[in-house]
Length: 184
Image (cartoon, rainbow, N blue to C red; front, side, top):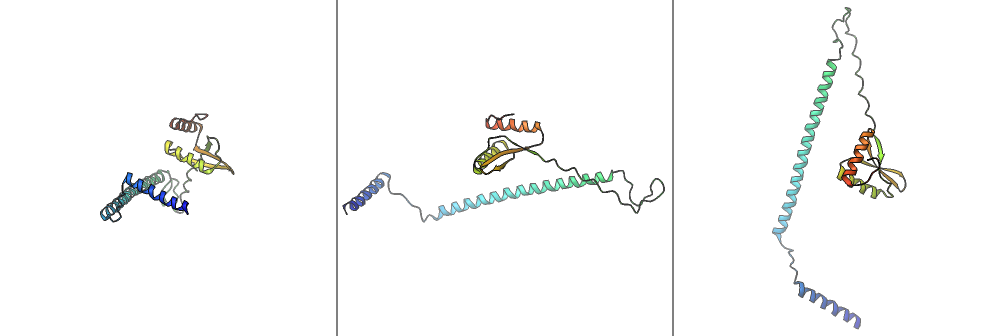
């Protein structure tokens, strides 16, 4: 009983001394103007983000339209300069080619698959590898991938087309991070 009474008296005394030294806190629970100001500021931030997104999507739409137009005009120009005779006109030997169709255009060459180069010691957890990749992407701007070799072994790699590009990316990583990488 005395322990409980001592505990209560000690706690109340401590609270009283803290309030005496620091002062009574002022709580603004019914401050409508402050609440309205914070609400308006949050709404304004959302509007700014929305306008930013709309401007980016507008530029993206314009870029896609420009690329599609360039691609379309490039295909039209390539088709008209193919050296083939128009359909329905007489050929050089006097026969008409009205029943023939032009041969199909050859498909564009398949893009070369990039190679992936693992440049750092394997990580034991995927979370650690993701953190490493996030920091590297922020600092260097290069696209990285996490490759799971087996359970508990995660490697970080970047794509490259040839040895010159691989060396350039290793040098860029080394310069941006200060890490000593082999081959850079």
